[in-house]
Amino acid sequence: MSRAGLDKDPHEVAEMFDGVARGYDRTNSVMTLGFDRRWREMTRRVLDLRPGERVLDLAAGTGVSTVEFAASGAWCVAADFSLGMLRQGRRRRNRRGVPMVAADALRLPFADESFDAVTVSFGLRNFQSTVVALREMARVVKPGGRLVICELSTPTWRPFRALYTNVLLRALPVVASKVSSNPDAYVYLTESIRDWWSQRELGELIAESGWDDVAWMNLTFGFAAIHRAVKPVRALGAGVR
Image (cartoon, rainbow, N blue to C red; front, side, top):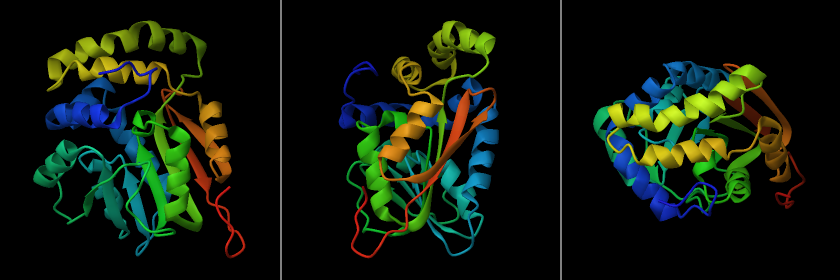
């Protein structure tokens, strides 16, 4: 698997997630000390879904977030590039009949303006091009529709940031070796976290990709962050900038 700082080969990324699918959700909970559940709940609140809305949950993995979103009464689609993740989700938790679709984030198999909202939880940093993915998400969302991204980020408190960078990130592969079905994949995941954009940098990328009203909130001292934005309402025929 190539280093996170290099171009991400989509097929290698998909193969990596296929390899960790069996224990992925359990590993995430262990490695985040259970905070992943709280972060998903905050993401759900920010999305503010309403019955009848159409929502795309991109990089949905096994669909753990998608099923929770669907409890709002919205029609939710789980999309992911990893077939292994989707198969694991179908076996374990798809009791609500949530549609699960294999999809490339850079070439989504959906028509223009198909959704009222799009969300990504802990998957944006794995896309080969962040900007292309953000623009593609804007394409499939209706004018006035919402974008909500929850992603690991840069701790804002300096002492915690030093601990996070020098201790916690280095420990992740070791912890993963005890609980993951494919511990080597977490070396890549650690690098992808270390090389990721800061909160402000990601906010600027979102704005450059055609979204308005960009804002973010830190979770757990900035260990994770939620970014939200709105697709501009433009005159008929105007494209995404």
